[in-house]
Image (tube, rainbow, N blue to C red; front, side, top):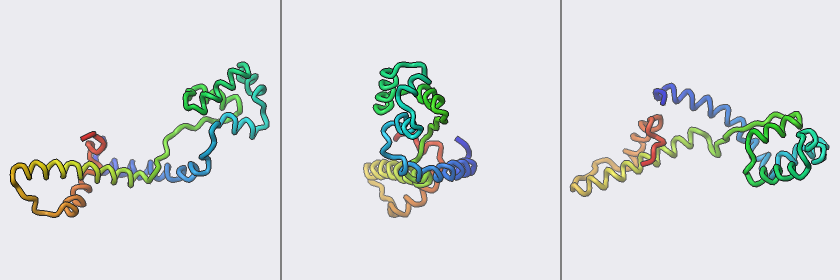
Length: 153
């Protein structure tokens, strides 16, 4: 893990790039087969694509079925994309802004640690002087870029 300042810069850079992509997710949802979608857009039959791939039509139909089921390999998708003069793009698009995901994880992690500490303190008959919300805000900022943020507790 980078130092907190470097990590903050990296997070901002990655977040900025991915935020540009996120709206596309809504536009492309509902496409069950990219092979069929692009192939039909090109006006190419299954037979024509199969021939370009040097496989049989039933084999291509099987690959389309695998794609729909999420069982096709990235290499096979790349090969099919090449046969249609396309680029395969593979990536992860966060459901929320990266900063929100990190903040939510820091809150979750900090809350869990605070709950554990309060339990131990109660067992030792000690009182917590500050209220939980005040302490949470303070501690979350410390945890945000901690190398332990994503460790399971």
